Amino acid sequence: MQLLGGAEFSYRYYLDPVARATVVLLPGGIGLPDLFYLHFERFAEHYSVITFDYQEQFTTNAELARAVASLLDGLDEHVWLVGQSLGGVIAQIVAKFHPERIEGLVV
Image (cartoon, rainbow, N blue to C red; front, side, top):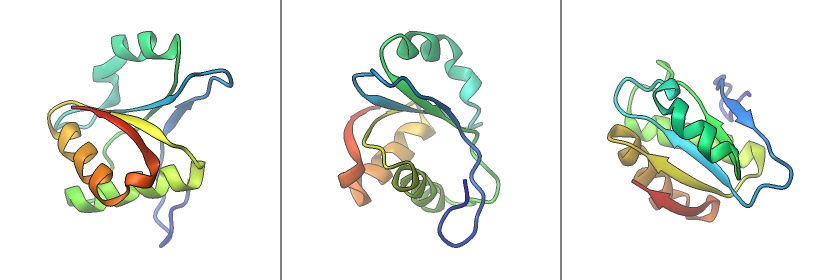
């Protein structure tokens, strides 16, 4: 997806049309969503799930949080953010500055 400002943002989106909600998995420091692979399987049983690698073009937590919010805007999604370690920090920043897209947090 191309974000406002032209940056490319690669992501994975498991869309379940009858899901109760959408969950965004935000891993810790190395930013690899594969760390959540067991959680992904469980969440995908009942929810749509969005994951992505932390991309090098976003060099600060604030830039990454803005990119996540822009992704959610582009997908027109209201989500639960599930963040572990650094992912919890990113989740809180997104929720603080973009509460209109956030249903809840698990940090």
